[in-house]
Image 1 (cartoon, one colour):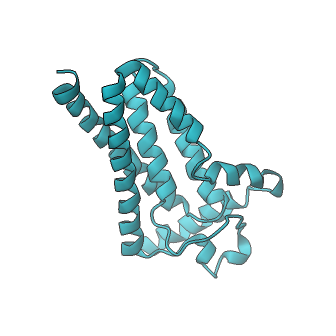
Image 2 (cartoon, helix red, strand yellow):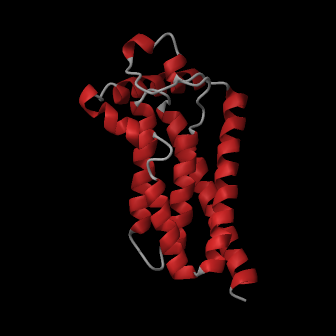
Length: 189
């Protein structure tokens, strides 16, 4: 059963990856780059400061640093534990796919880009939801686009992406709850 699931995952990867074209490659390389969305993060921090104040913003910054470290390191634990080669490292499919990333990496299950972007989206989106109702949907869409970029550039299978998004959502929600607890207990009391 697991072999069949991985085969379907490979077939879906090849389909999605081969939808790309040279015309769009640069855009997807920009989307997949880690620092591309730094201005968006700065805007989110500004909005959090505006709605919660400086003390809460300091708490949020510390929690986001811990959250991203947590999701990133757990991603590495899973990658080393499962040792599933990335598509770009799979010699059986390399001639049938488009690989445009700068580097390949060794293992890919699950995607750190997906988990980190989803954790940030859920965390910030839930904190700002009382003030900007639809922002969370924009952030979730942004996270999905970042996740898809990893398939486009040839470094992750769809299952890597889905599991990364799920882990990131759980992590973002847990840190959101922790933020509410800290705000209630130490900042606004």
